[in-house]
Each structure stands twice: as structure tokens, then as C-alpha cells.
Picture 1 (spheres, helix red, strand yellow):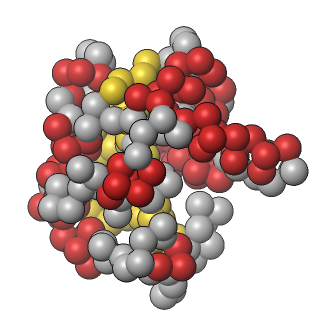
Picture 2 (picture 1 turned 135 degrees about the horizontal axis):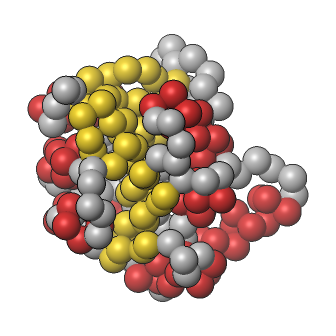
Amino acid sequence: MSRWTELSGRGDGDHYAARFDELAASGADVHGEASLCDALCAALVDGPARIVDAGCGTGRVAIELARRGHVCTGVDSDASMLSVARRRAPELTWVEADLADLDPACLGASQPFDLVVAAGNVIPLLAAGTEPGVVSRLAAVLRPGGLLVAGFGLDAAHLPLPDAPVDLAGYDGWCADAGLELESRFATWDREPYECGGYAVSVHRLRG
């Protein structure tokens, strides 16, 4: 069982989506993840990018990236979250699957993807022990030169957990084992430089 499921249970999709709706209504920018990925894609491909939103939840990031012209597929194991995503964007591809068991064939794409984004503390909320395998599976859906973009907390202040189960050295090691090289690291999705803090956004590129 993933740490996310242990924390939240199931059936919380509408409540989760409402939190971000309230933030957006207040004037907050809730699309920092999409803005960063959109900028990375502009340098990566000429035209729309093929993107996987891994651990997509209610689809906020994928829906915004699709609105900006990209071809997006969302993957999540929580049916209640995907129910909201499908209701809000029925035209997009939504796949119910555990990232630890992700089969590239289930994504329905005829060619590899340009970018995979894992926002919202996806990596530290995986089931304990599955993290290296998930990173490997995410790398496997990328084309050579494609990007894995992941943002997550590194301390209790930035996580819904008492302790951080993942550190940057460990994550970078899993990425290296999967053929991914660190390209850049930020302190926020707004690309503030990362020095040493409790949250990091890492961009890794698939070799080859």
C-alpha cells in the first residue's frame, strides 16, 4: 500500500480538487508545475509535446498542459481522483494504474513520451521500497533525450509525513540506475535556484 493511500484512504477526489479550486478563485497561481513543464517542452520539441502526468490525481497539471497545446496522458491509482479528472477533461487519456506496476503499453501511445512530470509529492508518497522501480518505469516511457520532472518535499515541513522517506542523493541514484542524468534542480516550480532547502524540483534527462 502506498503512503498516499495510508494517509488519505480512497474517495477523496472531490475534496482534493476543491482545495485547488479555492486557491485559484483567490487569485493564487496553481499552475506553476505546468508552466515549468511547458517551458521545458518549448526547448525540447518543435510543436506539441507528448506528456505523462504520473500520479496525476484530479488532473490539474495534465489539463492545464493540454490547454497549452500538449498531448497529455494522466496516470493514477486512485479511482476517486481519476473520476474528477475524467469529468473535467473527458477528451484526455486517463489511466488507472499503480506506478509500481506501470506498463508502457497501457498508456496507449504509439511512440515514447517527451516528458514525464511527477508533481505533488508523488515520489515520497509511493509505497516503501517501490521508489527505484517506479523511477525505472517512468524512464522506460521516455524517448532518448526525454525529461523526468519531479518535485517533492525533503522534510516534514514540506510533506504530510513525520519524516522524509526520500532524499536527493537517493533519488539521483535511482535516476542514474534508470539511465537518467540530472540536468537542473530548482527550489520551486518557479525555477528559483536550489541551494539547500526542504523542497526541490529535479529535472533529469534520459541518456541517448
